[in-house]
Length: 268
Image 1 (tube, rainbow, N blue to C red):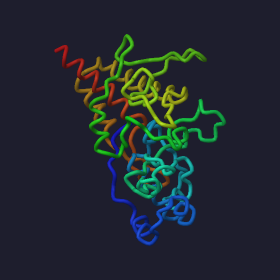
Image 2: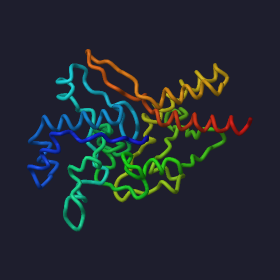
Image 3: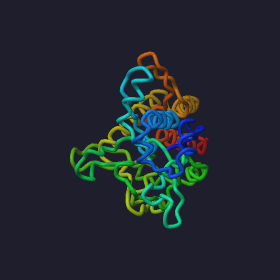
Image 4: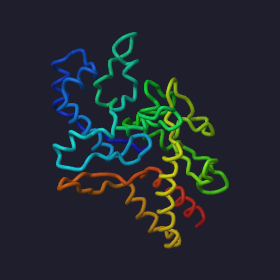
């Protein structure tokens, strides 16, 4: 995960909330499709078109901007504080349309019949995290500085998939990683960030970066260049429309490279 910098909420959402005091998400998303699509696109742009949890690319159908707004089926508007709880009853605030509570997540294999393949918002559902702050909050930035990644005999922690014996990389900031006690705990839902397909994708990305830097003998300047590359938005053009996106799993790559850089500095 990475810190998400929130922009100003879409003007149409602001107008809707002024005109509709109930702030019911189902009514808004069902009866105001143009504004709902504008909201979804705004959330994707804030996240650099990555899932706020697993950080894989959220793919939108190619086309012009009008077509894109009509084809946002690969993302879910995630309520970090669940709307089933924070609905204005039982002493809780109504956060249904609170823009700071809304972030973009992937569909998380939501059509899967079993929970073993579901992840991110599709699995968390109405769950509420105990320890993990909202990625769009200043608290999350502080939380990131306190993460300590447990190693298992190497600079990176791996697990071996018992099914196909492939070595998989374990996600940092994974609330349901039982070995990271300080991150454990959701009331109802987890994220399942170590779902096998996600882990394989992360490993492939890291392995590519690792091979590139091994060819450079882990030269400090090259590591710093790669950190900058994975920390910066870049332009991706689709049917003439330019989007600003992050590399998939960018936070994981930066996390490990900063650790490598620290090791090099300590050895000098």
